[in-house]
Every structure is written in structure tokens, then in C-alpha cells.
Image 1 (cartoon, rainbow, N blue to C red):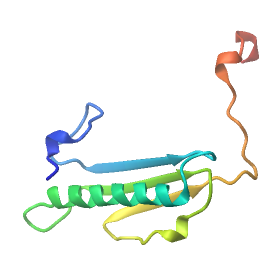
Image 2 (cartoon, one colour):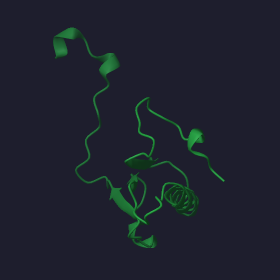
Image 3 (cartoon, helix red, strand yellow):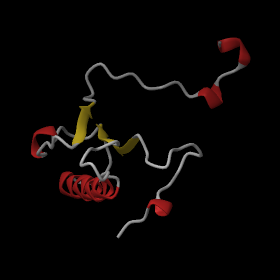
Length: 112
């Protein structure tokens, strides 16, 4: 069983976390749809285990769970079942209208 002390931390927290957010990213040359979906489902299972750990004695959930997916390869949003317990957000960035981020390493001070 996953223990609270095993959770990675950003250096600030509560005895019972208020929010747990799992972020998933996939680039256009990233893993296959099946592998990406498998990894997302694996992380959703982890969030469900954490949900059971942080369920308080009165039967109320004090922690909000989020799974946020950013996908640049293909839109597989409809392949996931939604749950009331975990907020699932899937963002697909198709190539239409995308602009590359500037390479700040190649900029000179005069470019700003």
C-alpha cells in the first residue's frame, strides 16, 4: 500500500493534502496511443489508491484529485471513462494555429 510519506512534495503541504494533480504530456513524436492510454490509466489507478488513503472517518473527501493531459500527437480524449471522484481534463493541441515557442537561448538582449 502506498504510504503518505512516499508522495513527492513541492515543499509545502498539509497533513491531508487539499489537491493532488497528475500531469501527463505527449509530444507529436511521443509514445503510441495504446502506450499513452495505458500510462494514463495506470496513473488514474494511483490516484484512486490515494483517494482511499485520504478518505476521512466521516466518509467525506477532503482532497480534490485532478488528471490533466496535454497531447500533441492525436486526440484520444473519447477513449477514457470519466469518474466523479477524479477531475479529468484532456487538452489536444492540433497543428492548426500552433506557434513555436521562441528559443530564448538564441536571443540577444536587443531582441526584447
